[in-house]
Image 1 (cartoon, one colour):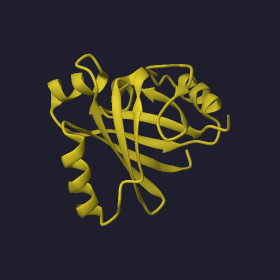
Image 2 (cartoon, rainbow, N blue to C red; image 1 turned 180 degrees about the vertical axis):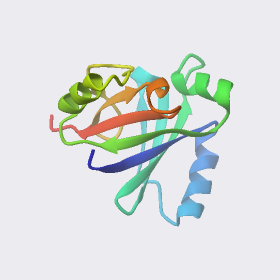
Image 3 (cartoon, helix red, strand yellow; image 1 turned 135 degrees about the vertical axis):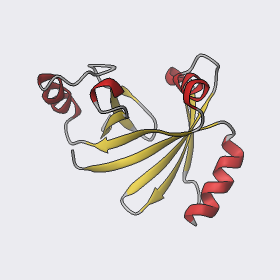
Image 4 (cartoon, helix red, strand yellow; image 1 turned 180 degrees about the horizontal axis):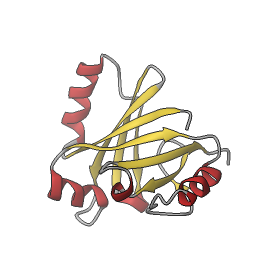
Length: 134
């Protein structure tokens, strides 16, 4: 794992959250994107070498909607940048980490992603991210 790529924060109202984070971080949101496959709208802020990702559910069955219903708004996941996501998945599986998906899929911000289940990471959802080259 190369670095913390971003921290994901589950929110209910994207417009108001963007305003708050633009003031808090003293920087503009550089991208808003819908990820239909996940039922989520995302907004990104660059802070040094890392990012903050705001996550708003776009339907009541999305993972973010279920997360907010169960735990409320707040930190949802931490994402790590990796050089080779397939190799990293193999390494983690060989060490008995539980992955939510064993095959990477396309995510927001031009990334291939895979999530580790919180049951195997001391309670925190962990995302692996690799820049897509396609």
